[in-house]
Amino acid sequence: MPAPLSRSSRSSSRPSYSAVPKRKKNVKNRRLSVSVTLFFYTLFVLFIFGLFFLLWFFLTESGTNLRYLMADTLITTQHRHWAKYIIGNDELEKRVHRYWSQFDTYSEVQDQGLVHVDGTSTSTIEKQSKPPIEIEDIQGTNFKGKLLIVHDPTMLRIAVPGKAGKGEKVSDMVQRLDALAGVNAGGFVDPEWKGNGFQPTGLVMSGGQIFYNDGGMNTPTHIVGIDKEGRMVAGKYSPSELLKMGVQEAVTFAPRFIANGVGLIKSKADGWGIAPRTAMAQKADGTVMFAVIDGRQPGHSIGATLYDIQNIFLERGAVTAANLDGGSSSVLVLGNQGNQDAAVSASTNKTTKAVIVNKPSSEYGERYLPTSWLVFKDPKKANIRNIWEGLDPSKIDPSKW
Image 1 (cartoon, helix red, strand yellow):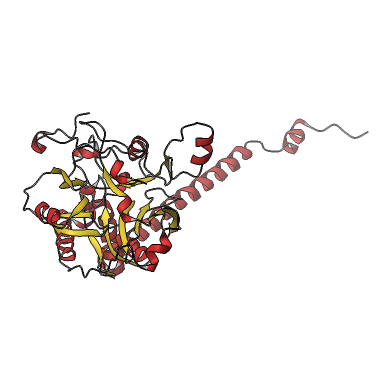
Image 2 (tube, helix red, strand yellow; image 1 turned 30 degrees about the horizontal axis):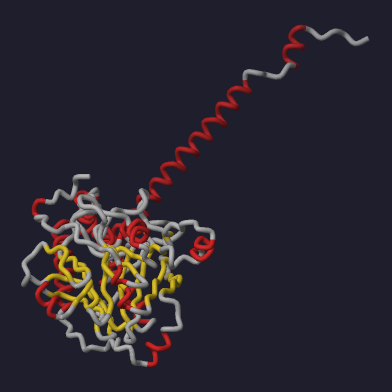
């Protein structure tokens, strides 16, 4: 029988538990040290990356091009003042001034009369067998949108809200006036981008009548319009000149960027930033095209430059093109008569509501606007009345809802 272990023997044979916590503590310390090292290493890498990015962003040609593109994009939004943090306030003012100077220069190009809408050409006769409107998908590297094609330009009218004191959604204008389709048109006074959409900027003409004019009869302003023959008119004209030219429908916006089949914007850098867009063009046979581009929606469409829109129109044979109001206002609406489901609805005596075809950028939905381009089967019967008649433009409160 083995001899019992002595107290000292038993105690010496037991493992030393006091050493275990020390090892755990050392492991924790090493892990903490590694984490701290990784944290500061990451900060250092980010600092170096940020330093090189700033040097590239401000001191290289490619970085400067991106900087100005970002600034131009901000200029077209309600956050225009943010652009000064990218290019400086003085440069911001210079850039805005330069753009308007360019727009004035574009408007000086003499129209050579390349549009023929006399109704006798073979192309015009062929168009009679086509539907009055067509819609195509268009897209580019960073954008998606729709192209509204109107084969007979005399079917177009400028529509305005039905009630004074407040703008109206394009979808409501299309529905109320029983139009085939509609897009947003001219600009408007929009204090802090919260305006009621009732006060236009510049000029509004509909049915050959001046509905609104915030300047003199001999004061030139940038306009986009259609004359009584169906020819698109774009550039800088006075109201008196427009009446003499027989212009029927017109709103104020800029710039004209295609003249006589030639693109006036020479590069993407001069394309006035990336944004949702609405623009209008005409082909030599009179066909009118409206491009409505979605934007400010990552994963769907960021937006397009005017240079992008110019290329889309030129590829389709445009001889004249001009910009319309864009941003959150850009919308394309298909009406009852243009809706593919309209025939089914008519057979069941149900009313089909106007449908928004594109994806507007505003998270609040359609904006309330003072003007829209609408397409009618019989434009002469459209009940469009002058809601600004008798009003003093200087006394309109565009912020009062």
